[in-house]
Image 1 (cartoon, rainbow, N blue to C red):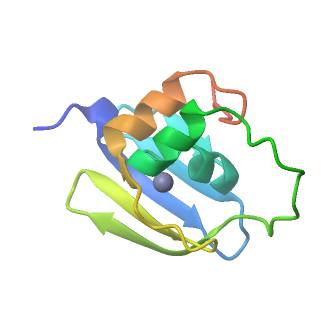
Image 2: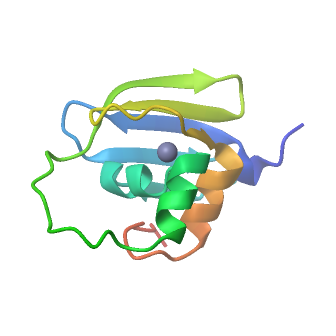
Length: 112
Ligand SMILES: [Zn+2]
């Protein structure tokens, strides 16, 4: 059986309000993730490469607020987002999401 810390008891995706994702974990820890944060933290190879290159030197462009157009489960271990910017290769494993929630990153509001 999976570690309850990496096993969500509930997942709420606030698609219509654009507020992001709330996960309650098996050990009752709660994590909130904004869509912008999740899109930024996309674990796929091309986004890893983009992040490792640092901020883009081009002038800031207007981007519509990022949000998923579709959210789907991947087996029992991950969720997948189709983003409104056309990107959809990232698979967000629960292990990964839990680690984001533990990391004390600025955009992850922790209910402590
Ligand atoms: Zn990506």
